[in-house]
Length: 389
Image 1 (tube, rainbow, N blue to C red):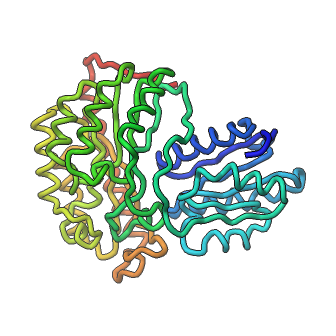
Image 2: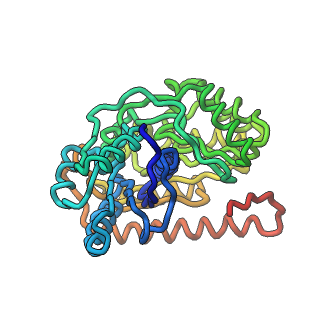
Image 3: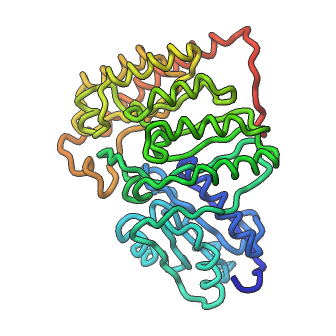
C-alpha cells in the first residue's frame, strides 16, 4: 500500500456468523490503511457484505442499496462497495453494477484480503471496479483480527463439498479449504491474551476440518488447553460427518460447551434423499443417542426447512415426530426458497406458499412448547453465565 488514507467507513452485514466474521476482518483491513468506523449517515465509504442463502437477505440488499440515491444527492463523493456471497453468483456482480451505476466497486468471497487494494484503486483513479474471482485460491493466513471482544469468531475452514440440493454455499464459497492448525491456535492465544473468554470455531462443515476423521477433535483438544479460554463452541456440524472421536472430545474437554447445533433439515427419509443430505432420520437419531450417552445434559439445536419440493403432509409429520423424539432446545426454521443455480430450483412439485406458511406455523408452535419446557426445567438451578455485552 501507499501512504495511509484518511477516511471513515461503515459496514452493513447480512447473513450468518461467517459473514459477520468476514465483516470484522474487512473492518480491520480498512483500519490498517487509515480507515475509522463511523455511523452509516456520515461515513465516507459504505460497504455492504451480502448473503444469498435466503431470499429475504437478497431483497434487503436491493432495497437498502437502492435507497442510497437520496444520500448520494447530498454526498456525491460517497464511495459505495458491495461484496460477499451474493456477488459471487454467476454474473450477479455485473448485473448489480449495471442496475446501480452509483456503486463504485463489487467483490466476491474469495478475495476479501484484497479489499484495501480495490478501495485505493477506486479512490485514486475514480474508476469503478468489479473484482470477483471465479475460483477460490489457497487459504490466506495472517489476516487481522479484532481484539477485545469477550466472544470471538475464528474461521477454521472455508467452503463446502456437500452440495445439498437446496444450498448455494459450494458455488459462492468454493470447495473446502482448511486453515493451518498451528495458525488457528496462535490466533486464539492472541485473542485470549486480549480478553476473549469464548471462541466460536466457524466453518460451513467443521466436522470436515482437514479432511475429516480425528482432525477436528484434535483441534478442539488443543484449543481446550489455551489459558484464558473458558468456553468453546463451533458450527456448523453436518450430521453425516460427526465422528465418535469428536463426540468424545466434546465430552472430555473442560471448556467445550455441552451444546451442539446439528442441522436435521427434515425428519423424512424421502426429503433427506431429495436434499442429498446422505443420512436417514434413524442415522441422525443414532448420533443423538450417542451424544446423550456421553453428555446427558447436552443442549441440541437444529435447522429445518419446510415445504421442500415434493414434501407431502406425511413427510412433514415425520419432521414433527422427530422434533418430539429428539427434543431440541430451539432451532432455526425456514420456508424453502429456491436459490438460483441449485438443483432444487428446477425440481418438480414445488410447494405452494400458503402450505409452507401453514406448516411453518405448526412447526414453530411445537418447538415453542419444547423450548418453554426446557426453560422451565432450569428453574431453581444455578448456572454459570457469560455476559457478552
